[in-house]
Length: 358
Image (cartoon, rainbow, N blue to C red; front, side):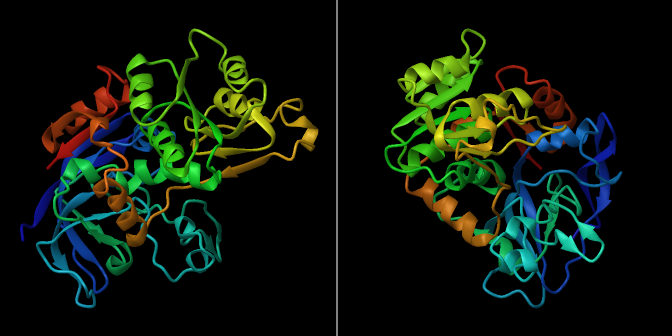
């Protein structure tokens, strides 16, 4: 094994740079994954801008596809050289949050207080995967072998974007025959649109302003698209549902405007399923909330992780139920990751997701 590796690290707000770091040492329950493909997430951009605090020198990234390089002495059921992915959320499997069924919040509750999203460790509390190698903790709970015949880019969305988007539909309890509105058709919103289709929704309305994203939404299952730069999305959705409103509105951007619009298009008793990461306090308008008397349900979800979740998502891909490979619009080697961040953070050239190859 080489002594050092290349890694994209958080240097300071506004600066992520490529550095040499030691290759991680493998503990008994860990696995060392040689990264073959990874990507940049919108959350990484929040880190880059200093909007989400992480330690200086931390390796960024939480969406790894790779090959098992080395296994810890206590890890069973895998072999070195095996292709595998790990979710952005890497639960231990034995915390209070895990045993309560919320693996994404693993480690959130401690004697020192409560920290949300405790299961998100890669690129948050431990070194992430925009590097030559990444150390996967609790490997037997988190490593999922990649089925034969699936390429890196086919499964690249599974660790985060696909899992997050689909849980928006799952947490919203989308049912056969439902009307669903999905606000914002970035990668997560597009996966939420695909998830609503998988769950049985028959009227899916995708909201965005970028023509390429609206076209992609149609490919993934949207029955109607609304360009919010041309018309009021609330009025358009009310018209498309004959004034009834939608059963489920999925918010996939994380702004006051999209949250409020999602609330305003709900039918009485409808569900707002929120996936956005909000950078400030939210306001709930009295009229849209029906003064608290509308039987509405507001639910938030964090990307589900763990190997069983990853296995199921890859089965969806292998079964041809959802094709997310077209979401990869740009490709960069790890040596050019700073250039990739510049492109992705400024949303130039029709970028949806970039594939990074060490």
